[in-house]
Length: 76
Image (cartoon, rainbow, N blue to C red; front, side, top):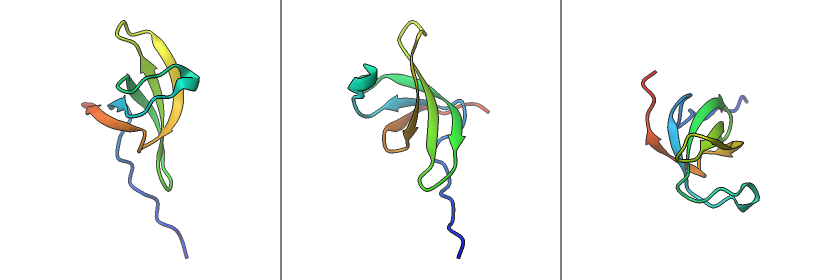
């Protein structure tokens, strides 16, 4: 019996907010990032580029949808 793939909560270019500290990457709750890739699955995962308030890259990580929340929906 095939397993259904969960519909991703976020799409490419959505801006998301980190919901938990990731000390191994020096990322704190509230930091913003852009979804660059969506990996469908159970559950979906997202490649997110997190940036500082000057637009400099802090980290490029794969996160699950429980680690982030939508901050701003992309226009595309």
